[in-house]
Image 1 (cartoon, rainbow, N blue to C red):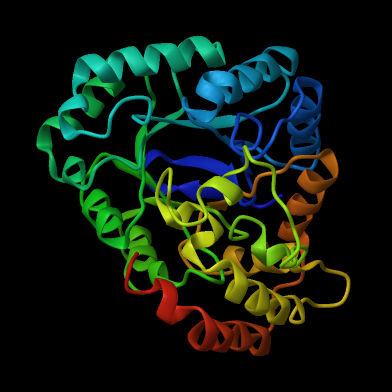
Image 2 (image 1 turned 180 degrees about the vertical axis):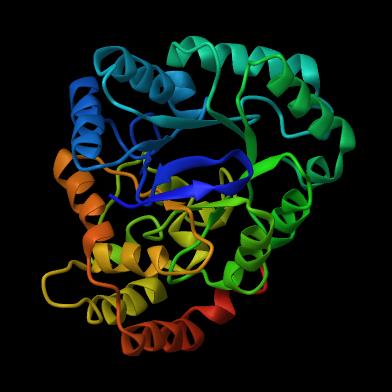
Length: 327
């Protein structure tokens, strides 16, 4: 699989990675053996980049990856985790002592001495402007608790503030065919600075797979049920902030753009891969089959201009007014 470089740390990662929120919580139950089978399928398909967080299943996702790393020492993996969402979201909590405690817990969960990449996990907006916060992150690097740090953001403004920090290695941001605002300023700024762009929620929580209907029922413990309107965390994390009913109609139109031999989900991933400045896209997977299918998107023939233009027209007509001004 194609590898792309996060410039500021000269680190290569697979252009399709694996997001592991699904393996921890909030997407319905996933058994341990099934989770490990997903990790195995991804690696065997060329994935070298896993993304997790200390809050996914309160550490379960990290622990599962840690077990996998022990069982597959031959796998050359780069693992990014996140910190900061296990406490009340107040800027006062983003201090060095807490950072040390949080990263020590993640190091234990993952079974590593030094974390490859730690991302602030969508912290309160003032955190991005705090010199003390980034000094503390630099200290973690000096202490070899972490090799590098980045941020996971909700808004383009937060991303641009983080990119301006010289130590920021990567920005993780919601980016997909139903969320185009990062194209305007974030991706160009990141490319110029050598900052990696990790595209999360690439399928708009599954909308862009074209598999859902108005009759689809998600489990009660699935965020697509309990956070559809932002009841538990930022609404943008669920269906990219797109209204479910109108999103279904747009998703059906997007599905019709899929080239022969490709699924709508693979087409959505291929669309992201082709956008200038993207380092890696991190779809989740609940089965080995999904993990393999996602990885195959990297090998698809690039989408032609006509398809890219049609996707843009669909966004402008059906989605833009819902989400563009918010994020």
